[in-house]
Length: 393
Image (cartoon, rainbow, N blue to C red):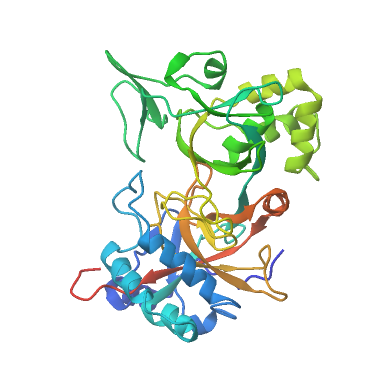
């Protein structure tokens, strides 16, 4: 358990009145179930950390990225005009002024959840590196499917007549919209020629790992590596297969790792098939080149993910590009690390709430181990850009 500061769920009445009146105009008073409490940078121990340039680089990548394919809903926290001006200022920041840039251009707010047992919760995710082929064969028999042409993805809060509002995608038909087929139906061929394979993996377990992580690198038989990127989902609810394994008593929760539960699935193919099909969610992909091996795939912000610096947040609450100071010891940190500056660059269906994050750890097996071990109570401090000149906050 990391050493966390004392977190209070209440603001003194006078301070709260000043807060609402405009002394800290960059933040709303409340986000979800959390209160945003102004905090001076001097109170953040070791801010901005041992390598703030890495956070600045991650911030710049989000700044220059093309617009996300799925726009964020209106009303997310983070003034877009102020963030745009801050992005412009970031372009001219040198290594010696990185710390001053974050202190001068942003205001810090603790994300305080009154009555919560922990200040926030952080998990990790990674980019798996798998073996595959562009052609089907005895060693590679499981298809990775392209996005079908009748899939309609729904933005947060968007609905279609006659559909359950909980569904995040729909199937377009001549008569209107209907729920998209679930995993079992897709596995049984419900899509036909609408979703052709882009490549082939060893087995259904590798496909599950790829879909759980949302993207991956695939090593081809000739030694080349290609990237497989998220390109939509069927919108059905996600069920964690590892959780089902534990619930049915096949493996204990204690010591459960990705390697352990995937090995168990391969050793029990019939049960594995049943459990995997119980997860109704299904992800579709597209191919892309690996342009920079040191960076991860594009996140929801459409910027390449930076290992240890890119954070998946609730995209219905926080604007991509916002920096967060995470209070605690994180994977790959320097000895004695007490906090790290990271950038909101991604989201995920399981990342819900103002003090919930998923840290991108990196690529490959070792990153997978680190990601699997990251399940910690962490303090969240959001950095909001100061109001843009001439623009209302």
